[in-house]
Length: 322
Ligand SMILES: Cc1cc2nc3c(=O)[nH]c(=O)nc-3n(C[C@H](O)[C@H](O)[C@H](O)COP(=O)(O)OP(=O)(O)OC[C@H]3O[C@@H](n4cnc5c(N)ncnc54)[C@H](O)[C@@H]3O)c2cc1C
Image (cartoon, rainbow, N blue to C red; front, side, top):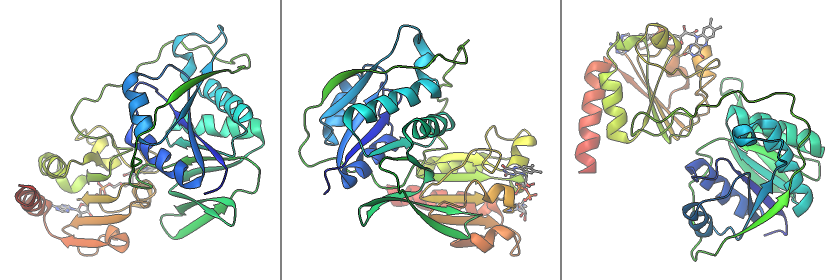
């Protein structure tokens, strides 16, 4: 264990998502882990942080010019992160991967003159340097980027590690600090947080994803049923979304996922789709065409009609769980 200080961003501070618990677990493996927030954490959040060994949460006090939801703007989050690093003399900042968080991480790294790794799939210490690993170019290369500056800022994909609480929970203190925010070049007109409409995990963070493509011929029932048997999120190919069969697609121009298991059913595996799922740890493909390109990157290939295969898989999984 080094005497490094590692800051983890909590945004929002009203819930600690699994992706943040993963970051706290990584942070502890790198040094002394602390959290940064832009709003008051709830009692439940403090208890969760305590269970993950976090003794200190730094809560940014923002200038009055930052009103309401403007605290979520990347420029504001970045200013708070940079101020927190200066105050704590932190060495590493870990941020979950979302579009807004990536922008905040980049702005904070710029302000701090820090090395930045975006979308790391793993973070470790190598000879005293922070190294972020990731898979790139449609899964053809695994890269490891060592940060050579004093401060390292990394956004880390979901499912990088299994969250591990500490054996004995600690009590967590909130410490306020002043964060100067430069004049904002935008005014927030409105912000709507999309409610989760189903009991399923979010696509970006799910450990297991089941995705359907044009091979579903418009019936996503078997895809959704298998996802529910597995407690998985549901996604689609862009063509399936453009057909109006589902609402969210995975891929280079859609949502990027990096689950432990990705199951693609009736998806050919076009490069645009691969770009959003090739970082999955295990890829399972169900396709009636034995020559389908997705089989080239699959760990498990099932040649068959998804309307037969998926219900059988769901049945076996339910029986196994019972
Ligand atoms: C600029 C641009 C950006 C794009 N971005 C994205 C993106 O981000 N994400 C994305 O997904 N796509 C994207 N696309 C589209 C992409 O190029 C492909 O057209 C798309 O991914 C194909 O979707 P699909 O695999 O569902 O359909 P298809 O390629 O038509 O494949 C359907 C598959 O289903 C199989 N099948 C058929 N019937 C069955 C059955 N009963 N059981 C099992 N298998 C069956 C077939 O053998 C076939 O392999 C983009 C395209 C462009 C031009």
